[in-house]
Length: 126
Image 1 (cartoon, rainbow, N blue to C red):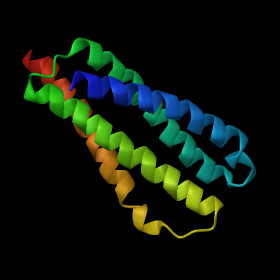
Image 2 (image 1 turned 90 degrees about the horizontal axis):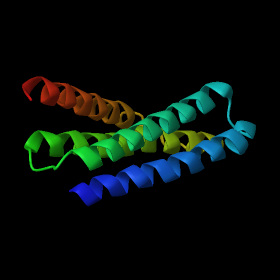
Image 3 (image 1 turned 60 degrees about the horizontal axis):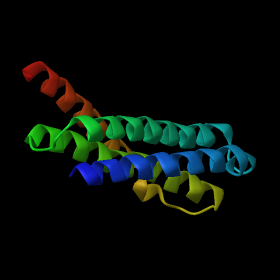
């Protein structure tokens, strides 16, 4: 599990920088400001969680169920939250209809909150 968490930390960090540059240089020309702002929110959340996953990857042993659930919530949450935002923004730029992905974003957000709530719980019971 430690290697998986570190992998996703590096993966999210690497692609967060790429998507951030893509948004700043390419999408800026084709998306309205409110859609670009959503894209930037996806990048910001992805990069924040990349750093936090890297941190817990070096400090947790992932033997404890709560530690595994924290990491899993964040990995799945970032994938759903940021991934759905990227897809919706890209679809808007390409004039595609992917509105069915709209409900995926809040599910990802709930998983991100779950991870943070579990981390709070973890610190309280330690």
